Image (cartoon, rainbow, N blue to C red; front, top):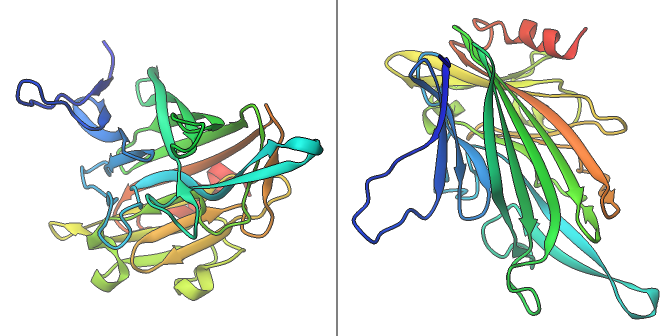
Length: 305
């Protein structure tokens, strides 16, 4: 008998009604660990729970409704389309904000397939296939297919913390793409409102820095955001980007609750048709503060050294 269940949420609706989005929930021995949600504009992880059952992320907060708990997104995606005379035209889209942003219409990330399998009694692997489609426009009623993504979410459950490894493999479709340079990309987390610094939350990186201005930019190997989650309890989430050859993580961190790791801040990503870019980020969801949860030791085990 499996220790995990991975099933769609059943929502009782009146006859003739239908759900606008769908959600697959992962449980371990009956306790919810996380769910994969397909929203209007992108798939994302929500809810996301600590081992004690506290939700540590926020879905579509009012100040930034495009912040989708734990998600991958990118602004400034240019589809390089062949034109007459061996020239190239750039079709510019945004896959980050849910409306027109800086003149670029919003595209959509659409999950086309999802599957899951138990790896061990404490590990579960989920694979999503996702289409990156531009907006509906002239001569593209379904939106132009800019890229295909294979996203693998591997969950390791524990007593004091859960580890979630998210590997994204983004492949250009029939045309070359250029992503960035932009600060609105790539791997993002928005913490629960109760956890922000104004309510007692604490941000810290691997060097011990806790000031947001100091944390933003290059230099950190990991960042932890911990704070109150109710019932006189504390929980947190640590983001650990795995090394990328030739690219240094650029962090945007804000005390009001966001962590973004952006490898395309100063240099764009160029992909020819069929060419792929792969990245992996580990996320530690823990009870207690970062020091109590020993996130520094966990990060060293993951990154080495």
